[in-house]
Image: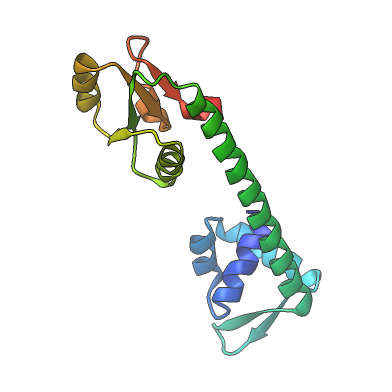
Amino acid sequence: MDKQLLLLRELHLNPVTTQRNIAKAVGLSLGSVNELIKQMVNMGILKIEKISQKKVIYNLTSLGITQRAEGTYKYISEAYAFLNELNKRIDDLLNGINGNNAVVLFGKNDGLCDIIKTRLDFNGIQYIITNSFEEIKLLSEKNKILIIVWNPEKVALLDDNYNYIDLLSYI
């Protein structure tokens, strides 16, 4: 999401705020927020209404509301297209998996893990989830396993002795 859209979203949700709070909320420097606000005022996207010595209200103009809506729509459309492509790539990867291996998901139980689990379930592939390298060692001693990993810090723990797929390098 671009900086201006982040700022528009934050100002829409919290019109009575400080630039310092905006900077924290959107992850930008105070100077960047100040500059973006000035630019948006000059472009007619934003109006600032002073309500006291230290308080202002940031109001999106009709142009600002339109740009926020268009930017949000574009962001959601691009994210959806990306997720569809990601699902397709994961499915292609799963189609090449040898059924003789137990599938182990090795990494944090995060959003990407959820996507992988959904694709495995969709393809009828059973799996185990772990975040423990010790468990990977034990599983690999007892079974033929295929490890699917997506966290860079977990990839660094694996070497050529393990049968694994670094999902981030595949997608």
